[in-house]
Image 1 (cartoon, rainbow, N blue to C red):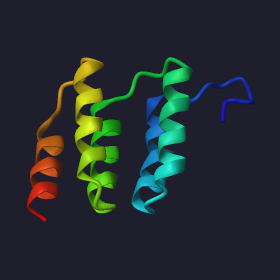
Image 2 (image 1 turned 90 degrees about the vertical axis):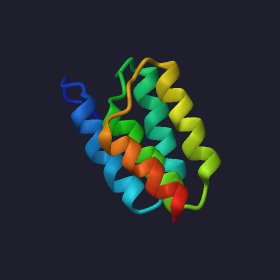
Image 3 (image 1 turned 90 degrees about the horizontal axis):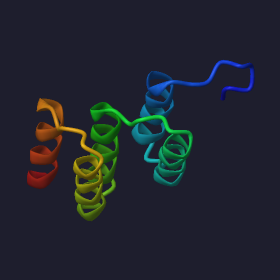
Length: 92
């Protein structure tokens, strides 16, 4: 991505991340997330919500909570969707 002089933005990253998370490709999703951080692309609340949802789908509530803490640490506030994903994940 970005090799034609057009660096990807958060929307581009989130599109790729959605595909990886929906297909439970956690290693690739986390690598992409790490690459975003390296390139100073600030993750959005949607980024974190997708990751949290992926962790719950993979039966990894610890990963979901770690992602929640990372989101808070970076100053990103959860939205209604994030709370719904957390509640749904905890009760399923």
